[in-house]
Length: 162
Image 1 (cartoon, helix red, strand yellow):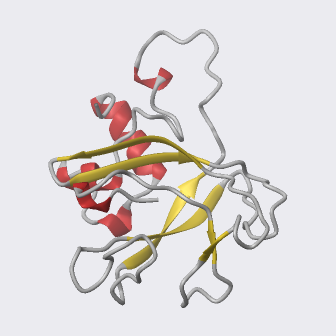
Image 2: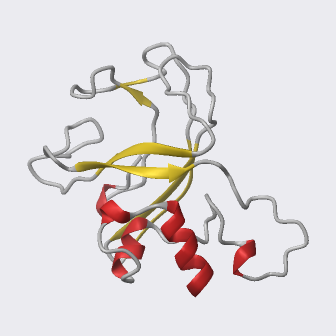
């Protein structure tokens, strides 16, 4: 998933690469299924926000099966130039990290809500700030500190991140 740093349209596909150090192939090309869908993509003030969905269990042998709760997620970034000249070219060495994402869905069911921040500030909510927005607003010191817990806390204190 990506948007080319604002240079092109957002893109999303479902890839598999067994060793993590070679060019991946789409799940479909390998005989699997495409189990991800892009929900929203924005590029504003040099910040990318990409929201996508994927079932926890896909029954596709080329997908890791996810579980409710905190789950590690690998993400990568890249500047155009020597690297990342297409969706299949490699990222520069070191341009990746792992964050913990809460996939529990805690807070999605809110019966009798009063319309306050608790009604929109939950794991997976579109009201939450992206990692880059949290850094820019001083809520966290670096992208390494980005968690859904931090985003939810910021949302509850300051309101939705629109």
